Image (cartoon, rainbow, N blue to C red; front, side):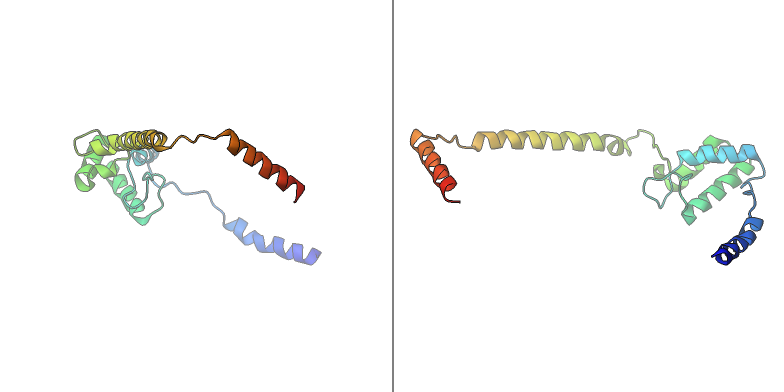
Amino acid sequence: MIRIWALLCVMTIPGLAAAQDARPLAENPQAEARLKALAVELRCLVCQNQTLADSNAPLAEDLRREVREMIAKNMSDQEIIEFLVERYGDFVLYRPPLRVTTTLLWVGPFLLLAIGGTAMILTVRRRQKTLPEVVVSDADHARVEQLLSDGAKHP
C-alpha cells in the first residue's frame, strides 16, 4: 500500500513542475480591463443569453480578439459598440436600446403575462357560471348514511 501511495506521489510531480501562472491575454492591463467591461455589455452571437465575457464559444473568442484589436487601434468604447451594432445589429448588445424595432423585445414579456392572466381569470369566471348548483335532499343524506354504516359493518 505504501508503494502505491509513493508511486502516486511521484506521478504528480511532473504536473506540479509544469504549473505556471496564467499569462495575461493582453500586454496592456488597461486594454484588458476595457475588453472585460465591453464584453459584459455584448452578447455572444451563438449562445443563449450569455455575454461575450461568459461565453467559451469559438465565435466569442473571435469577437473578443476583434474587440482587443480595435482597442489596440485606440478606438473608443462607443466606436467599438457602433461598429459591432452596424455589423451584427442590435442583437449583439446584451441590453439593446428601446427602439421601434426592439419594442416587442422589451414589452413582449409583460404583454404575454397580461394576456395569460386575463385568459386565466376569464376561464375561471366562465367555469363558475356554468357549474350547476347541486341540491342534496334529506333523502340523499339518509341514503349516504345508510351506505356508510353498511360499509363499516362489512369490510
